[in-house]
Image (cartoon, rainbow, N blue to C red; front, side, top):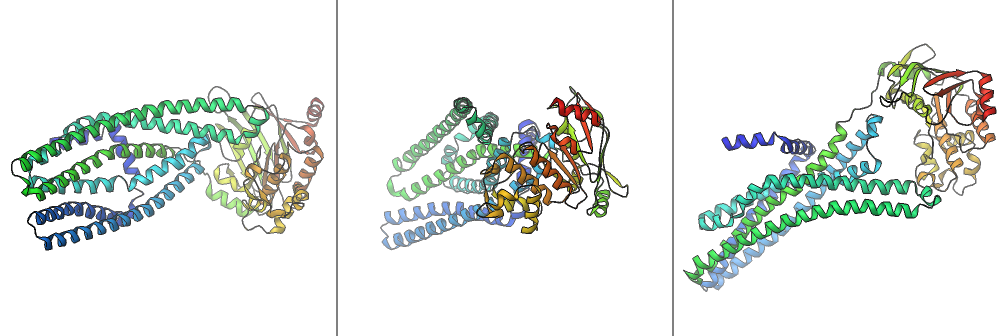
Length: 588
Protein backbone atom coordinates (compact mmCIF):
# COMPACT_ATOMS: atom_id res chain seq x y z
CA UNK A 1 0.00 0.00 0.00
CA UNK A 2 2.84 2.36 0.81
CA UNK A 3 4.41 1.68 -2.59
CA UNK A 4 1.08 2.34 -4.34
CA UNK A 5 0.70 5.65 -2.49
CA UNK A 6 4.17 6.72 -3.61
CA UNK A 7 3.34 5.84 -7.22
CA UNK A 8 0.12 7.87 -7.08
CA UNK A 9 2.00 10.83 -5.57
CA UNK A 10 4.55 10.69 -8.40
CA UNK A 11 1.78 10.60 -10.99
CA UNK A 12 0.29 13.77 -9.53
CA UNK A 13 3.61 15.58 -9.82
CA UNK A 14 5.10 17.32 -12.86
CA UNK A 15 5.76 15.29 -15.98
CA UNK A 16 3.79 12.21 -14.95
CA UNK A 17 0.74 14.34 -14.23
CA UNK A 18 0.99 15.90 -17.70
CA UNK A 19 1.28 12.47 -19.28
CA UNK A 20 -1.68 11.21 -17.27
CA UNK A 21 -3.89 14.12 -18.41
CA UNK A 22 -2.74 13.73 -22.02
CA UNK A 23 -3.44 9.99 -21.91
CA UNK A 24 -6.88 10.63 -20.44
CA UNK A 25 -7.61 13.09 -23.25
CA UNK A 26 -6.47 10.59 -25.90
CA UNK A 27 -8.70 7.79 -24.66
CA UNK A 28 -11.87 9.83 -24.63
CA UNK A 29 -11.89 9.11 -28.38
CA UNK A 30 -11.59 5.37 -27.82
CA UNK A 31 -14.82 5.12 -25.77
CA UNK A 32 -16.97 4.89 -28.91
CA UNK A 33 -15.01 1.84 -30.01
CA UNK A 34 -14.72 0.11 -26.64
CA UNK A 35 -16.25 -3.15 -27.89
CA UNK A 36 -13.97 -3.35 -30.93
CA UNK A 37 -10.98 -2.46 -28.76
CA UNK A 38 -12.09 -5.05 -26.19
CA UNK A 39 -12.25 -7.70 -28.92
CA UNK A 40 -8.85 -6.55 -30.19
CA UNK A 41 -7.39 -6.95 -26.69
CA UNK A 42 -9.04 -10.38 -26.32
CA UNK A 43 -7.40 -11.57 -29.55
CA UNK A 44 -4.07 -10.20 -28.38
CA UNK A 45 -4.34 -12.01 -25.04
CA UNK A 46 -5.38 -15.19 -26.84
CA UNK A 47 -2.34 -14.93 -29.10
CA UNK A 48 -0.09 -14.48 -26.07
CA UNK A 49 -1.48 -17.58 -24.37
CA UNK A 50 -1.21 -19.55 -27.60
CA UNK A 51 2.48 -18.59 -27.76
CA UNK A 52 3.06 -20.28 -24.40
CA UNK A 53 0.93 -23.22 -25.60
CA UNK A 54 3.17 -23.52 -28.66
CA UNK A 55 6.20 -23.89 -26.38
CA UNK A 56 4.42 -26.74 -24.58
CA UNK A 57 3.72 -28.48 -27.89
CA UNK A 58 7.41 -28.09 -28.78
CA UNK A 59 8.27 -29.84 -25.52
CA UNK A 60 5.90 -32.71 -26.35
CA UNK A 61 7.41 -33.09 -29.82
CA UNK A 62 10.93 -33.28 -28.38
CA UNK A 63 9.88 -35.70 -25.63
CA UNK A 64 8.18 -37.94 -28.19
CA UNK A 65 11.30 -37.93 -30.34
CA UNK A 66 13.45 -38.89 -27.35
CA UNK A 67 11.00 -41.68 -26.49
CA UNK A 68 10.97 -42.76 -30.15
CA UNK A 69 7.18 -42.51 -30.30
CA UNK A 70 6.74 -41.63 -33.99
CA UNK A 71 2.94 -41.65 -33.83
CA UNK A 72 2.86 -38.99 -31.08
CA UNK A 73 5.56 -36.91 -32.80
CA UNK A 74 3.23 -36.56 -35.80
CA UNK A 75 0.20 -35.71 -33.64
CA UNK A 76 2.03 -33.06 -31.63
CA UNK A 77 3.64 -31.62 -34.78
CA UNK A 78 0.23 -31.35 -36.52
CA UNK A 79 -1.25 -29.63 -33.46
CA UNK A 80 1.71 -27.27 -33.36
CA UNK A 81 1.25 -26.42 -37.06
CA UNK A 82 -2.49 -25.88 -36.59
CA UNK A 83 -1.82 -23.57 -33.66
CA UNK A 84 0.65 -21.58 -35.78
CA UNK A 85 -1.92 -21.18 -38.59
CA UNK A 86 -4.60 -20.04 -36.13
CA UNK A 87 -2.12 -17.55 -34.65
CA UNK A 88 -1.39 -16.15 -38.13
CA UNK A 89 -5.13 -15.76 -38.78
CA UNK A 90 -5.71 -14.01 -35.45
CA UNK A 91 -2.80 -11.59 -36.06
CA UNK A 92 -4.21 -10.75 -39.50
CA UNK A 93 -7.63 -10.08 -37.96
CA UNK A 94 -6.18 -7.86 -35.21
CA UNK A 95 -4.24 -5.91 -37.85
CA UNK A 96 -7.47 -5.23 -39.78
CA UNK A 97 -9.31 -4.18 -36.61
CA UNK A 98 -6.41 -1.89 -35.69
CA UNK A 99 -6.46 -0.21 -39.12
CA UNK A 100 -10.24 0.40 -39.01
CA UNK A 101 -10.23 1.90 -35.53
CA UNK A 102 -7.09 3.98 -36.10
CA UNK A 103 -8.45 5.65 -39.24
CA UNK A 104 -11.79 6.37 -37.57
CA UNK A 105 -10.10 7.89 -34.51
CA UNK A 106 -7.67 9.81 -36.75
CA UNK A 107 -10.51 11.35 -38.77
CA UNK A 108 -12.50 12.15 -35.64
CA UNK A 109 -9.64 13.93 -33.86
CA UNK A 110 -8.55 15.70 -37.04
CA UNK A 111 -12.08 16.91 -37.73
CA UNK A 112 -12.55 18.13 -34.16
CA UNK A 113 -9.19 19.94 -34.13
CA UNK A 114 -9.93 21.49 -37.54
CA UNK A 115 -13.31 22.75 -36.33
CA UNK A 116 -11.72 24.03 -33.12
CA UNK A 117 -9.16 26.03 -35.09
CA UNK A 118 -11.91 27.59 -37.21
CA UNK A 119 -13.91 28.85 -34.21
CA UNK A 120 -10.95 29.94 -32.05
CA UNK A 121 -10.47 33.60 -31.27
CA UNK A 122 -8.69 35.20 -34.24
CA UNK A 123 -5.95 36.95 -32.23
CA UNK A 124 -5.13 33.75 -30.32
CA UNK A 125 -4.65 31.87 -33.59
CA UNK A 126 -2.04 34.39 -34.74
CA UNK A 127 0.39 32.77 -32.30
CA UNK A 128 0.62 29.72 -34.60
CA UNK A 129 2.30 29.57 -37.97
CA UNK A 130 0.19 27.86 -40.63
CA UNK A 131 2.95 25.28 -41.16
CA UNK A 132 2.89 24.43 -37.46
CA UNK A 133 -0.89 24.06 -37.63
CA UNK A 134 -0.55 21.64 -40.54
CA UNK A 135 2.07 19.62 -38.69
CA UNK A 136 -0.10 19.31 -35.60
CA UNK A 137 -3.24 18.59 -37.60
CA UNK A 138 -1.61 15.81 -39.61
CA UNK A 139 1.54 14.36 -38.06
CA UNK A 140 0.59 14.78 -34.39
CA UNK A 141 -2.97 13.58 -34.87
CA UNK A 142 -1.73 10.54 -36.80
CA UNK A 143 0.69 9.65 -33.98
CA UNK A 144 -2.06 9.92 -31.37
CA UNK A 145 -4.60 7.85 -33.33
CA UNK A 146 -2.03 5.13 -34.05
CA UNK A 147 -1.04 4.96 -30.41
CA UNK A 148 -4.56 4.41 -29.11
CA UNK A 149 -4.36 0.84 -30.42
CA UNK A 150 -0.61 0.55 -30.06
CA UNK A 151 -0.22 1.43 -26.43
CA UNK A 152 -2.81 0.45 -23.81
CA UNK A 153 -3.95 -2.73 -25.67
CA UNK A 154 -0.28 -3.69 -26.07
CA UNK A 155 0.27 -2.95 -22.40
CA UNK A 156 -2.54 -5.36 -21.49
CA UNK A 157 -1.60 -8.14 -23.92
CA UNK A 158 2.12 -7.93 -23.11
CA UNK A 159 1.34 -7.92 -19.39
CA UNK A 160 -0.78 -11.06 -19.77
CA UNK A 161 1.94 -12.69 -21.86
CA UNK A 162 4.51 -11.71 -19.22
CA UNK A 163 2.46 -13.07 -16.31
CA UNK A 164 1.57 -16.35 -18.05
CA UNK A 165 5.18 -16.96 -19.04
CA UNK A 166 6.41 -16.00 -15.58
CA UNK A 167 3.90 -18.36 -13.92
CA UNK A 168 4.95 -21.28 -16.15
CA UNK A 169 8.64 -20.52 -15.60
CA UNK A 170 8.22 -20.23 -11.83
CA UNK A 171 6.43 -23.57 -11.82
CA UNK A 172 9.07 -25.30 -13.95
CA UNK A 173 12.25 -23.59 -12.68
CA UNK A 174 12.13 -20.63 -10.23
CA UNK A 175 15.87 -19.95 -10.62
CA UNK A 176 15.46 -19.61 -14.37
CA UNK A 177 12.58 -17.16 -13.81
CA UNK A 178 14.82 -14.99 -11.63
CA UNK A 179 17.61 -15.09 -14.23
CA UNK A 180 15.15 -14.12 -17.02
CA UNK A 181 14.18 -11.03 -15.02
CA UNK A 182 17.72 -9.86 -14.34
CA UNK A 183 17.25 -6.65 -16.34
CA UNK A 184 13.97 -5.64 -14.66
CA UNK A 185 15.42 -3.86 -11.57
CA UNK A 186 17.89 -1.90 -13.70
CA UNK A 187 15.14 -0.78 -16.12
CA UNK A 188 12.85 0.27 -13.27
CA UNK A 189 15.61 2.37 -11.67
CA UNK A 190 16.46 4.06 -14.99
CA UNK A 191 12.86 4.50 -16.22
CA UNK A 192 12.26 7.93 -14.66
CA UNK A 193 15.43 9.43 -16.16
CA UNK A 194 14.76 7.79 -19.52
CA UNK A 195 11.17 9.09 -19.61
CA UNK A 196 12.22 12.64 -18.80
CA UNK A 197 14.92 12.71 -21.48
CA UNK A 198 12.69 11.04 -24.06
CA UNK A 199 9.91 13.56 -23.46
CA UNK A 200 12.30 16.50 -23.81
CA UNK A 201 13.72 15.11 -27.05
CA UNK A 202 10.23 14.43 -28.41
CA UNK A 203 9.19 18.01 -27.74
CA UNK A 204 12.31 19.32 -29.50
CA UNK A 205 11.74 17.03 -32.48
CA UNK A 206 8.13 18.11 -32.86
CA UNK A 207 9.14 21.76 -32.67
CA UNK A 208 11.89 21.58 -35.31
CA UNK A 209 9.65 19.45 -37.52
CA UNK A 210 7.05 22.22 -37.43
CA UNK A 211 9.74 24.79 -38.25
CA UNK A 212 10.75 22.87 -41.39
CA UNK A 213 7.13 22.49 -42.52
CA UNK A 214 6.42 26.18 -41.79
CA UNK A 215 9.40 27.30 -43.86
CA UNK A 216 8.49 25.11 -46.82
CA UNK A 217 4.81 26.04 -46.70
CA UNK A 218 5.55 29.78 -46.57
CA UNK A 219 8.17 29.53 -49.32
CA UNK A 220 5.78 27.77 -51.70
CA UNK A 221 3.02 30.27 -50.93
CA UNK A 222 5.34 33.10 -51.97
CA UNK A 223 7.23 31.33 -54.73
CA UNK A 224 6.35 34.05 -57.26
CA UNK A 225 8.04 36.69 -55.09
CA UNK A 226 11.01 34.40 -54.49
CA UNK A 227 11.50 34.03 -58.24
CA UNK A 228 10.72 37.65 -59.08
CA UNK A 229 13.31 39.04 -56.64
CA UNK A 230 15.81 36.36 -57.67
CA UNK A 231 15.88 35.03 -54.09
CA UNK A 232 16.29 31.38 -55.01
CA UNK A 233 19.81 31.16 -53.61
CA UNK A 234 18.81 33.03 -50.43
CA UNK A 235 15.87 30.71 -49.75
CA UNK A 236 17.95 27.67 -50.60
CA UNK A 237 20.49 28.79 -47.97
CA UNK A 238 17.70 29.44 -45.47
CA UNK A 239 16.35 25.94 -46.03
CA UNK A 240 19.82 24.54 -45.37
CA UNK A 241 19.93 26.49 -42.10
CA UNK A 242 16.53 25.14 -41.05
CA UNK A 243 17.61 21.65 -42.07
CA UNK A 244 20.84 21.99 -40.10
CA UNK A 245 18.87 22.84 -36.97
CA UNK A 246 16.63 19.83 -37.61
CA UNK A 247 19.70 17.63 -38.23
CA UNK A 248 21.29 18.71 -34.95
CA UNK A 249 18.20 17.90 -32.89
CA UNK A 250 17.52 14.71 -34.83
CA UNK A 251 21.05 13.40 -34.31
CA UNK A 252 20.90 14.23 -30.60
CA UNK A 253 17.66 12.28 -30.34
CA UNK A 254 19.06 9.46 -32.47
CA UNK A 255 22.19 9.26 -30.30
CA UNK A 256 20.08 9.04 -27.17
CA UNK A 257 17.84 6.37 -28.78
CA UNK A 258 20.83 4.33 -29.95
CA UNK A 259 22.45 4.44 -26.51
CA UNK A 260 19.18 3.48 -24.86
CA UNK A 261 18.38 0.62 -27.26
CA UNK A 262 21.99 -0.60 -27.15
CA UNK A 263 21.89 -0.68 -23.37
CA UNK A 264 18.63 -2.62 -23.44
CA UNK A 265 20.07 -5.02 -26.03
CA UNK A 266 23.12 -5.62 -23.83
CA UNK A 267 20.84 -6.31 -20.86
CA UNK A 268 18.82 -8.69 -23.03
CA UNK A 269 21.98 -10.44 -24.22
CA UNK A 270 23.22 -10.87 -20.65
CA UNK A 271 19.85 -12.27 -19.60
CA UNK A 272 19.60 -14.67 -22.56
CA UNK A 273 23.19 -15.82 -22.10
CA UNK A 274 22.61 -16.38 -18.38
CA UNK A 275 19.51 -18.44 -19.16
CA UNK A 276 21.46 -20.49 -21.68
CA UNK A 277 24.34 -21.09 -19.25
CA UNK A 278 21.89 -22.13 -16.54
CA UNK A 279 20.11 -24.54 -18.87
CA UNK A 280 23.34 -26.10 -20.10
CA UNK A 281 24.67 -26.48 -16.58
CA UNK A 282 21.51 -27.53 -14.73
CA UNK A 283 19.93 -29.74 -17.38
CA UNK A 284 22.26 -30.87 -20.13
CA UNK A 285 25.44 -31.08 -18.04
CA UNK A 286 23.93 -32.55 -14.86
CA UNK A 287 21.03 -34.56 -16.28
CA UNK A 288 21.85 -35.17 -19.92
CA UNK A 289 19.89 -34.91 -23.15
CA UNK A 290 16.90 -36.86 -21.90
CA UNK A 291 15.31 -33.57 -20.82
CA UNK A 292 15.60 -31.84 -24.22
CA UNK A 293 11.82 -31.33 -24.32
CA UNK A 294 11.80 -29.50 -21.00
CA UNK A 295 14.92 -27.57 -22.00
CA UNK A 296 13.25 -26.49 -25.26
CA UNK A 297 10.13 -25.34 -23.46
CA UNK A 298 12.14 -23.53 -20.80
CA UNK A 299 14.14 -21.63 -23.41
CA UNK A 300 11.01 -20.74 -25.41
CA UNK A 301 9.10 -19.58 -22.33
CA UNK A 302 12.15 -17.63 -21.14
CA UNK A 303 12.29 -15.92 -24.57
CA UNK A 304 8.56 -15.18 -24.37
CA UNK A 305 9.06 -13.68 -20.89
CA UNK A 306 12.04 -11.64 -22.04
CA UNK A 307 10.20 -10.53 -25.18
CA UNK A 308 7.13 -9.49 -23.18
CA UNK A 309 9.31 -7.44 -20.84
CA UNK A 310 11.08 -5.79 -23.79
CA UNK A 311 7.66 -5.02 -25.30
CA UNK A 312 6.54 -3.41 -22.06
CA UNK A 313 9.78 -1.41 -21.85
CA UNK A 314 9.40 -0.44 -25.49
CA UNK A 315 6.02 1.11 -24.73
CA UNK A 316 7.77 3.94 -22.89
CA UNK A 317 9.06 5.70 -26.06
CA UNK A 318 5.76 5.27 -27.91
CA UNK A 319 3.78 6.45 -24.88
CA UNK A 320 5.96 9.53 -24.54
CA UNK A 321 5.72 10.30 -28.25
CA UNK A 322 1.93 9.91 -28.19
CA UNK A 323 1.41 12.01 -25.06
CA UNK A 324 3.75 14.72 -26.38
CA UNK A 325 1.69 14.92 -29.57
CA UNK A 326 -1.53 14.87 -27.54
CA UNK A 327 -0.23 17.80 -25.47
CA UNK A 328 0.49 19.80 -28.64
CA UNK A 329 -3.04 19.11 -29.92
CA UNK A 330 -4.62 19.90 -26.53
CA UNK A 331 -3.18 23.42 -26.72
CA UNK A 332 -5.90 24.25 -29.24
CA UNK A 333 -8.61 23.23 -26.79
CA UNK A 334 -7.29 25.67 -24.21
CA UNK A 335 -7.58 28.63 -26.59
CA UNK A 336 -10.55 30.98 -26.16
CA UNK A 337 -13.48 30.50 -28.50
CA UNK A 338 -14.67 33.52 -30.42
CA UNK A 339 -17.75 35.15 -28.94
CA UNK A 340 -21.24 35.11 -30.36
CA UNK A 341 -23.31 37.89 -28.81
CA UNK A 342 -27.01 38.78 -28.84
CA UNK A 343 -28.12 35.58 -30.63
CA UNK A 344 -31.83 36.34 -30.27
CA UNK A 345 -31.46 39.88 -31.59
CA UNK A 346 -29.32 38.64 -34.47
CA UNK A 347 -32.08 36.19 -35.45
CA UNK A 348 -34.69 38.93 -35.19
CA UNK A 349 -32.64 41.33 -37.33
CA UNK A 350 -32.01 38.57 -39.86
CA UNK A 351 -35.75 37.99 -40.20
CA UNK A 352 -36.41 41.74 -40.49
CA UNK A 353 -33.72 42.37 -43.13
CA UNK A 354 -34.63 40.28 -46.18
CA UNK A 355 -33.23 42.73 -48.71
CA UNK A 356 -34.05 45.91 -46.81
CA UNK A 357 -30.52 46.72 -45.68
CA UNK A 358 -28.65 47.22 -42.43
CA UNK A 359 -26.76 50.07 -40.83
CA UNK A 360 -23.37 49.55 -39.20
CA UNK A 361 -22.14 51.91 -36.49
CA UNK A 362 -19.02 52.36 -34.36
CA UNK A 363 -19.54 54.60 -31.31
CA UNK A 364 -16.42 55.88 -29.52
CA UNK A 365 -14.54 52.68 -30.33
CA UNK A 366 -10.97 52.19 -29.19
CA UNK A 367 -8.70 49.34 -30.20
CA UNK A 368 -5.10 48.24 -29.68
CA UNK A 369 -3.38 44.90 -30.28
CA UNK A 370 -1.16 45.48 -27.23
CA UNK A 371 -0.44 48.16 -24.64
CA UNK A 372 2.31 49.84 -26.66
CA UNK A 373 0.25 51.44 -29.42
CA UNK A 374 -3.40 52.41 -29.83
CA UNK A 375 -4.54 51.72 -33.41
CA UNK A 376 -7.41 54.19 -33.08
CA UNK A 377 -9.52 55.73 -30.33
CA UNK A 378 -12.89 57.51 -30.08
CA UNK A 379 -13.75 56.19 -33.53
CA UNK A 380 -17.24 57.06 -34.78
CA UNK A 381 -18.21 55.51 -38.11
CA UNK A 382 -21.60 55.02 -39.72
CA UNK A 383 -22.63 53.34 -42.98
CA UNK A 384 -26.26 52.96 -44.06
CA UNK A 385 -28.11 51.01 -46.78
CA UNK A 386 -27.56 52.41 -50.25
CA UNK A 387 -24.32 54.14 -49.27
CA UNK A 388 -20.72 53.66 -50.27
CA UNK A 389 -18.47 54.59 -47.35
CA UNK A 390 -14.71 54.77 -47.76
CA UNK A 391 -11.94 54.28 -45.21
CA UNK A 392 -8.71 55.98 -46.22
CA UNK A 393 -5.36 56.68 -44.65
CA UNK A 394 -1.71 55.66 -44.70
CA UNK A 395 -0.75 51.99 -44.68
CA UNK A 396 -0.67 50.37 -41.29
CA UNK A 397 -2.86 52.97 -39.59
CA UNK A 398 -5.89 50.75 -38.99
CA UNK A 399 -8.12 50.38 -42.06
CA UNK A 400 -7.89 46.58 -42.13
CA UNK A 401 -8.18 46.51 -38.33
CA UNK A 402 -11.48 48.35 -38.58
CA UNK A 403 -12.69 45.81 -41.15
CA UNK A 404 -11.79 43.05 -38.68
CA UNK A 405 -13.91 44.76 -36.04
CA UNK A 406 -16.83 44.90 -38.50
CA UNK A 407 -16.43 41.15 -39.08
CA UNK A 408 -16.25 40.32 -35.37
CA UNK A 409 -12.74 38.89 -35.75
CA UNK A 410 -11.46 41.22 -33.04
CA UNK A 411 -13.29 43.03 -30.25
CA UNK A 412 -13.11 46.73 -29.43
CA UNK A 413 -11.33 47.55 -26.17
CA UNK A 414 -14.00 50.13 -25.43
CA UNK A 415 -16.99 51.72 -27.12
CA UNK A 416 -19.74 49.96 -29.08
CA UNK A 417 -19.78 48.28 -32.48
CA UNK A 418 -23.40 47.80 -33.59
CA UNK A 419 -25.62 46.65 -36.42
CA UNK A 420 -29.12 48.14 -36.75
CA UNK A 421 -32.09 47.17 -38.88
CA UNK A 422 -34.76 49.42 -40.37
CA UNK A 423 -36.90 49.04 -37.22
CA UNK A 424 -34.17 50.39 -34.98
CA UNK A 425 -33.34 47.02 -33.41
CA UNK A 426 -29.60 46.80 -32.78
CA UNK A 427 -27.13 44.10 -31.75
CA UNK A 428 -23.47 44.00 -30.86
CA UNK A 429 -21.10 42.97 -33.62
CA UNK A 430 -19.56 39.53 -33.02
CA UNK A 431 -19.00 36.22 -34.77
CA UNK A 432 -22.80 35.83 -34.83
CA UNK A 433 -23.27 38.85 -37.14
CA UNK A 434 -20.98 37.60 -39.94
CA UNK A 435 -24.03 36.23 -41.71
CA UNK A 436 -24.83 39.84 -42.65
CA UNK A 437 -21.51 40.42 -44.43
CA UNK A 438 -19.89 39.62 -47.73
CA UNK A 439 -16.17 40.24 -47.66
CA UNK A 440 -13.47 40.65 -50.27
CA UNK A 441 -10.05 40.84 -48.58
CA UNK A 442 -6.73 42.00 -49.90
CA UNK A 443 -4.79 39.58 -52.08
CA UNK A 444 -5.84 36.49 -53.98
CA UNK A 445 -8.51 34.43 -52.21
CA UNK A 446 -9.54 32.08 -55.00
CA UNK A 447 -9.47 28.35 -54.21
CA UNK A 448 -8.53 25.48 -56.50
CA UNK A 449 -11.44 23.82 -58.28
CA UNK A 450 -13.70 25.43 -60.86
CA UNK A 451 -15.04 28.96 -61.09
CA UNK A 452 -18.51 27.63 -60.27
CA UNK A 453 -17.12 25.78 -57.23
CA UNK A 454 -15.64 29.03 -55.94
CA UNK A 455 -18.89 30.89 -56.48
CA UNK A 456 -21.04 28.27 -54.76
CA UNK A 457 -18.92 28.34 -51.62
CA UNK A 458 -21.04 31.25 -50.42
CA UNK A 459 -24.31 29.96 -51.89
CA UNK A 460 -24.34 26.19 -52.51
CA UNK A 461 -27.75 26.24 -54.24
CA UNK A 462 -26.88 29.06 -56.66
CA UNK A 463 -28.03 28.46 -60.24
CA UNK A 464 -25.77 29.00 -63.24
CA UNK A 465 -27.80 32.09 -64.13
CA UNK A 466 -27.23 33.58 -60.69
CA UNK A 467 -23.49 32.95 -61.01
CA UNK A 468 -23.41 34.60 -64.42
CA UNK A 469 -25.34 37.60 -63.06
CA UNK A 470 -22.79 38.06 -60.24
CA UNK A 471 -19.88 37.70 -62.68
CA UNK A 472 -21.39 40.35 -64.94
CA UNK A 473 -21.83 42.75 -62.02
CA UNK A 474 -18.15 42.27 -61.12
CA UNK A 475 -17.09 42.82 -64.75
CA UNK A 476 -15.73 39.27 -64.80
CA UNK A 477 -18.09 37.51 -67.19
CA UNK A 478 -16.38 38.88 -70.31
CA UNK A 479 -13.19 36.84 -69.71
CA UNK A 480 -15.00 33.86 -68.10
CA UNK A 481 -17.28 33.50 -71.12
CA UNK A 482 -14.24 33.25 -73.40
CA UNK A 483 -12.92 30.23 -71.50
CA UNK A 484 -13.55 26.80 -73.13
CA UNK A 485 -15.67 25.56 -70.20
CA UNK A 486 -17.08 28.90 -69.06
CA UNK A 487 -17.98 28.92 -65.36
CA UNK A 488 -16.90 25.27 -65.15
CA UNK A 489 -13.32 26.11 -66.11
CA UNK A 490 -10.61 24.92 -63.76
CA UNK A 491 -8.86 27.31 -61.38
CA UNK A 492 -5.39 26.62 -60.01
CA UNK A 493 -4.26 27.09 -56.41
CA UNK A 494 -4.58 30.74 -55.32
CA UNK A 495 -6.25 31.62 -58.61
CA UNK A 496 -3.55 30.11 -60.79
CA UNK A 497 -4.21 30.79 -64.48
CA UNK A 498 -5.75 34.22 -63.90
CA UNK A 499 -4.24 37.67 -63.58
CA UNK A 500 -4.47 39.50 -60.25
CA UNK A 501 -7.18 41.77 -61.62
CA UNK A 502 -9.21 38.82 -62.91
CA UNK A 503 -8.85 37.01 -59.56
CA UNK A 504 -10.07 40.15 -57.76
CA UNK A 505 -13.13 40.37 -59.97
CA UNK A 506 -13.91 36.69 -59.34
CA UNK A 507 -13.64 37.33 -55.59
CA UNK A 508 -15.98 40.30 -55.88
CA UNK A 509 -18.47 38.22 -57.90
CA UNK A 510 -18.42 35.55 -55.20
CA UNK A 511 -19.19 38.16 -52.55
CA UNK A 512 -22.04 39.62 -54.63
CA UNK A 513 -23.58 36.19 -55.15
CA UNK A 514 -24.15 35.93 -51.42
CA UNK A 515 -26.43 39.01 -51.52
CA UNK A 516 -25.50 40.07 -48.01
CA UNK A 517 -26.79 43.42 -46.74
CA UNK A 518 -23.25 44.66 -45.98
CA UNK A 519 -20.35 44.40 -48.43
CA UNK A 520 -16.75 44.97 -47.26
CA UNK A 521 -14.12 45.61 -49.90
CA UNK A 522 -10.66 45.73 -48.34
CA UNK A 523 -8.39 47.06 -51.11
CA UNK A 524 -10.42 44.69 -53.27
CA UNK A 525 -10.19 46.81 -56.43
CA UNK A 526 -6.49 47.69 -56.18
CA UNK A 527 -5.58 45.60 -59.25
CA UNK A 528 -8.35 47.07 -61.44
CA UNK A 529 -8.00 50.03 -63.75
CA UNK A 530 -9.90 53.16 -62.72
CA UNK A 531 -12.70 52.74 -65.28
CA UNK A 532 -13.34 49.10 -64.34
CA UNK A 533 -13.19 49.96 -60.65
CA UNK A 534 -15.85 52.65 -61.00
CA UNK A 535 -18.02 50.41 -63.20
CA UNK A 536 -17.86 47.58 -60.64
CA UNK A 537 -18.91 49.93 -57.82
CA UNK A 538 -21.80 51.33 -59.88
CA UNK A 539 -22.97 47.80 -60.69
CA UNK A 540 -22.80 46.85 -57.02
CA UNK A 541 -25.06 49.68 -55.97
CA UNK A 542 -27.49 49.19 -58.90
CA UNK A 543 -28.25 45.49 -58.38
CA UNK A 544 -31.70 46.23 -56.94
CA UNK A 545 -30.64 45.09 -53.48
CA UNK A 546 -30.39 47.42 -50.47
CA UNK A 547 -26.71 47.11 -49.69
CA UNK A 548 -24.30 48.95 -47.45
CA UNK A 549 -20.89 49.09 -49.08
CA UNK A 550 -17.68 49.86 -47.16
CA UNK A 551 -14.39 50.12 -49.03
CA UNK A 552 -10.83 50.61 -47.84
CA UNK A 553 -8.58 52.13 -50.45
CA UNK A 554 -5.33 53.94 -51.12
CA UNK A 555 -6.64 55.13 -54.46
CA UNK A 556 -8.66 58.35 -54.43
CA UNK A 557 -10.28 57.69 -57.81
CA UNK A 558 -13.29 56.05 -56.14
CA UNK A 559 -13.77 58.70 -53.43
CA UNK A 560 -15.99 60.90 -55.61
CA UNK A 561 -18.50 58.04 -55.70
CA UNK A 562 -18.64 57.73 -51.91
CA UNK A 563 -21.33 59.14 -49.65
CA UNK A 564 -18.89 59.50 -46.75
CA UNK A 565 -15.14 59.22 -46.34
CA UNK A 566 -13.42 58.45 -43.04
CA UNK A 567 -9.73 59.11 -42.65
CA UNK A 568 -7.70 56.98 -40.22
CA UNK A 569 -4.38 58.54 -39.31
CA UNK A 570 -2.22 58.54 -36.15
CA UNK A 571 -4.91 56.88 -34.07
CA UNK A 572 -7.62 59.36 -35.06
CA UNK A 573 -10.71 58.63 -37.16
CA UNK A 574 -12.33 61.64 -38.79
CA UNK A 575 -15.23 62.16 -41.21
CA UNK A 576 -13.72 64.39 -43.90
CA UNK A 577 -15.72 66.73 -46.12
CA UNK A 578 -15.73 67.11 -49.90
CA UNK A 579 -13.05 69.79 -49.76
CA UNK A 580 -10.68 67.44 -47.95
CA UNK A 581 -11.61 64.65 -50.36
CA UNK A 582 -10.71 66.92 -53.27
CA UNK A 583 -7.41 67.70 -51.60
CA UNK A 584 -6.69 63.96 -51.17
CA UNK A 585 -7.31 63.45 -54.87
CA UNK A 586 -4.99 66.32 -55.77
CA UNK A 587 -2.28 65.09 -53.38
CA UNK A 588 -2.45 61.62 -54.92
